[in-house]
Length: 161
Image 1: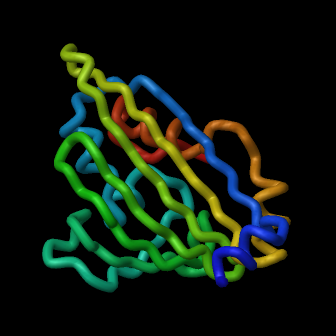
Image 2 (image 1 turned 135 degrees about the vertical axis):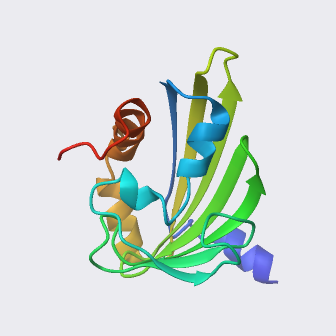
């Protein structure tokens, strides 16, 4: 009955999938260690985080952290759902106030010459009319953090904003 009722109505909420690919001048193991809630402050302008559950203080399976309203991405509750060293990272984020759930898959591919290809696949799902409005206004451009990561890997410092 629940499924029939759901399928009989129009889908009330929007979903947007974005895929970004970038070559980085670093080996996958160097890139992977930067994909960490505590290390991202070193290379993402405006990144702040509150670690909630981690055994090491760094990215790990089932790591849970929160970003406050002052964070560049706004308030959110994040959880690492897949962690395969130097190759794959997946996470789920509930973006508080935006009524959006985000599922991100990050894949690293070794080019064999101390460079790698990174593929970010971001799936945004609205869970309210407010979330629909956010998704409709969400840009299709490459997220600035990928350029900030490339800059950090090359120069070892935060890119000036």
